[in-house]
Image 1: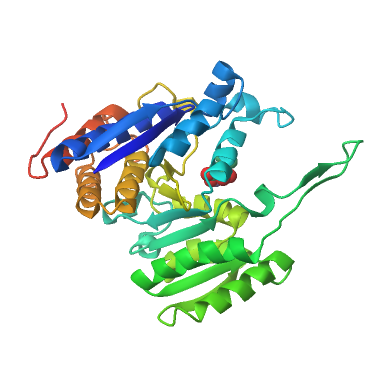
Image 2 (image 1 turned 135 degrees about the horizontal axis):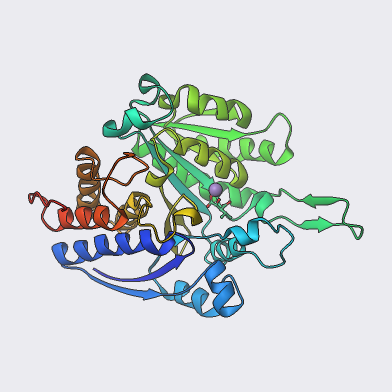
Length: 360
Ligand code: IPM
Ligand code: MN
């Protein structure tokens, strides 16, 4: 298969983890005889520094022309301490999501059996966790009208949803549930918010055409509790943009490290794959960032294009690194392996699944 892949390394550890993901894609290309063409562009704080915009026009165009986008991470502390900065790295990512129409963000949360001891939660609680969050990504409070009065004393952000925006992501979530364990949980705040009541109405109606899927509802405050109390109760979680942002970070603690969670953002024509973690600026250049989330984003990319064996080869190679504890220090505090070595190990195990490649 021929694929044009846009690479957006971004900020902090983004370039380091993305480089490992690319190694893995190249290993897949070689092993399975595909042709992947990579083109790189800037986004985030680095793009502001270099080009004066968090999403330069040339980057957007490259992404529009590509079959898929692979992103590292975005954000720099110099902007976090100044929330009034008129230009912020995160705007680049939000604009990219909107411009590419990436309305569904898919975030799997899995407790790998090799890692259940690493979770801050009890082993009995996390064992067997395997759910996926479908987060609406281009609507809601993130994109509603923002206002600040002239005195700068009153501010508002509008949370608005249309039936159409709800229904397109809901269909994807129902289809996923149908192919998994047949359970879909809508997370909302329908006891308070009008927009949540619309979500319930639209989702319940769509549910009628998926008779194999059991639909239930949870208020977001209760969901936040249930996710760490009994994560195994969930199969597919469907939710709006901001609730999804919050509960997916919460979900990331279950597996033992935020450095393990990948995500796919899907639209009608484009798709973007990225780790859910941020730019981790304290670790930049230290060769300690966990590349697995970025590498699992590659597995999601391959699956998106129907390359199932290829995706499995990546996942198996990741499992092997976890089992053999060829991992970064977030997963094993005295580990001598760095970002690059973990990337090399996984890439080599894609090329030759039988080969016991050892890192020295
Ligand atoms: C995420 C991030 C982004 C979000 C930020 C960087 C704008 O936290 O992808 O979860 O809030 O969506
Ligand atoms: Mn987030």
